[in-house]
Length: 286
Image 1 (cartoon, rainbow, N blue to C red):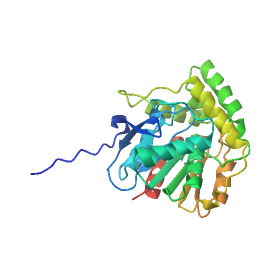
Image 2 (spheres, rainbow, N blue to C red):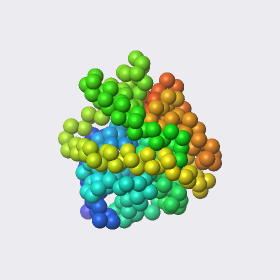
Image 3 (cartoon, helix red, strand yellow):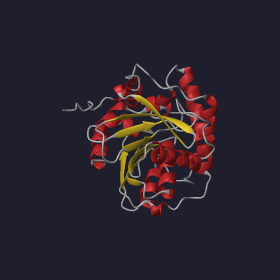
């Protein structure tokens, strides 16, 4: 008797929405790509839900890897309330990965706030992560990370005045190239039309911002414990998490790789996705 295997889902717009309960929290997640092997878990940015991942990057990696995206506690369709600190968010992620998914080894792809959570996760559980991608992020105690609150609120106001998505201001330069890249990115985020995630609540958003502020004002972590292969990437004009902090991470994490994309901001990897996606996919190749 032959069995018919499930078709491999390669489109992020078609990735099924799922839930799993771990540590008292019901986590919302999506998965795509071929099953089996070590999964790549994606850690998303401030105020983001499952719908905020650039499908071009997710799909490039899902061609050869089992990809999992998830909502942190209190965000989107996940239950509970957003934790007050990055450390707690890392503990939640650990529960989701080990108790919810049942995995003891993962690769990590992280952006912005997600990169901060991922760092705390790896520092506390270094044996959990095989390979690490840190984009648009910086180290605990990094200079001017705590100023993200002011930058974020200012750009939200600017976006409201122009009836734009705040990410067009927060992630991209406001020159012609940046404006076009920002609009194209926001359009890609709308490719999924069915079963979309819930937006983050204003309270959860403010809690995340305060957690980032605390992270920025904390004593630095010992990142020398991160010995796994690490890829670091950013734009050269990141106003949210200053680009110099990517270089700081590169210096602190031995043998890490650093890519800085020209004429781009916090969302440099999204503006330059055509160059970055294949690099990330190769770095995370099975």
